[in-house]
Length: 569
Image (cartoon, rainbow, N blue to C red):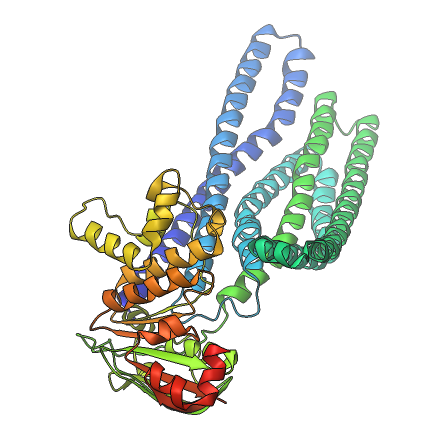
């Protein structure tokens, strides 16, 4: 277990402890508020019996002063309690968001498998918010319980019959409310699932908008989203109906309970068992009970939705890693020799491959599935079904995944740019000190011809590229992505089809720039581009998942028909 993991766990533990303290503080303050609220009807009854009925001005002034102090206490206790509750809810949601993002960014991967990016965003936002709101719901439930207990005690002191009705009736109401919340919990989970799927579809459609327009398929895409959105809407309406039925039935039960208390109190007053002031207190307490009992109904609904969202959050956090941890650090300095021994995965069929250190190696393929599988193995997104991949003679499975990511960078051709400026996308870290870092960034941009992209923008490298780099053309995005990969300067760089959207003249210049920039460092270019393959030291052709031919680009073009078909056709 690394130091970073321990640190993250410590932060999470401290956050949970802080939330527990705030929940306890908020619960105490809220209970004080409920105590005051319950005592107000009692005090009013005392005022009626001791001051109004007895026409005693002095006592009236005294009790009115007590009531004034009570209301000041009510105001401040509610404010402070609500503040503690809201802060606890927001911090809990924030902590969950960090945990989800941390799991998604884990170097071992796995969290994103089978989930659309939009779905992950929904879990990290809406579901995390609902789970965080459980803290506030718990506090509100404690406040309501305190109010019911205080009211029951006050009613017991006023009338044993009324007190027993409250003490025996409240658990029954809570049990019925819990039963009524079950359909809401099921429908809330379905609603969040459908909403997350709709968000994922929408994100995919927006990301591929240029392609859809180019294919003339935007109408079909819109219809697809319309169907998905309708399903999400139907699930939301079912959840809303379940919530309205639950709330309505609980309110009806609560109203009947309050009416029963008022009816019994009235009969006791008629037969002389209660004074006028006690009757006013009893009716006031009964009306006050509406608040706590309605709060119980709200708490039940919040807990039902929170449980459904918690299950979705837990599913993401509990997702197993795509690859197992390795304990060995990457040996420094990294020579950069890669070797595959009998690798089987996807389109690879027992592949044996040696990629020498310090050379620019081109890999052409007859089947794109073979390229994808090779990239996943080299980036250790997936371990081979059989065989092994080694870096400088050490199997990747033995190396720490985070250290391996720093040593071997696999730059996919469909990687995304971030919201922000072009400069921030090429150099994510702070380069404000200038000097050698500025020089390195300039060289990387020149090698990828991204400097030409900057020159064409209104504010140069300070120009924003939009979400996902959508303000740039496909070729411009590819150049910026390649510049970012070059600027990172890893010991081993693997690039996949970095020039598919640029013209042939620019592609040839990028090929020369790539070779010059990476001189002496291990670089693998997975592509069928003749311009890129022509500048490599060595070319390997993967055919049917195995090495079909090796040599220089010129030799293979002259002697191998399969290579000519793959590269020149």
